[in-house]
Amino acid sequence: MSTERSTSNLLLPLRATQIVLAIIILGLTGYVANALTDSYAGIVFEAPGNVSFNVFNSVWTILVGAFLLIVPLRFAGSKVNHHFGALALDALTAIFWFAGFIALAVWTNRWHTAGGFIVTGRIYNCAAAASVFAAIEWLLFTATTVLSGLHSNRSRGSITKSNTAATPAATV
Image (cartoon, rainbow, N blue to C red; front, side):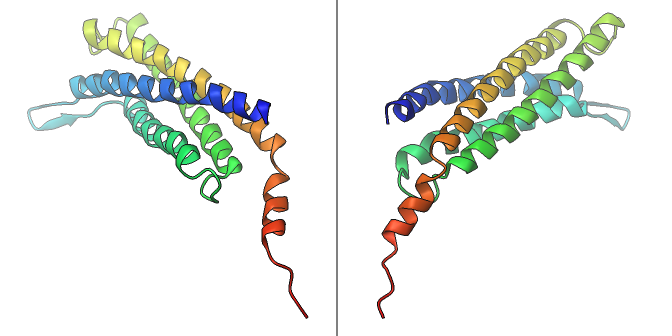
């Protein structure tokens, strides 16, 4: 019980940090996407997919983070609070952030080193900062995936034992 309590004590600040970083990244990538979306003479130029993907990652993280922060506190003994579900959401979000920060870093570096005329000044700085924060977000989700995996491994037999104990025996 003490290891389970220490894991949850560590998960709560990590989840809160993930949500705060997601809000920061949403603002940065939203600015970059808005600055790169324009139209000239009827031709619409859209933000690159990697910038838009990081906007998606931010919104996804806010929703998943809120879910994983609220559900264990509100529905502690319910089937809604399943440790394998948290592990799956953490792992999927870690994969999203890994792909997002790599794509954004490569795109930002390509335009910066090629002397690109599109990504300069404030837009470049915001994209670079979003890339760094996205890398930190990936590290945080990797940490929570490991913690969720450890929790799932420790408590994998508890669900079947509690469900069989709660089911009344059939009388003949």
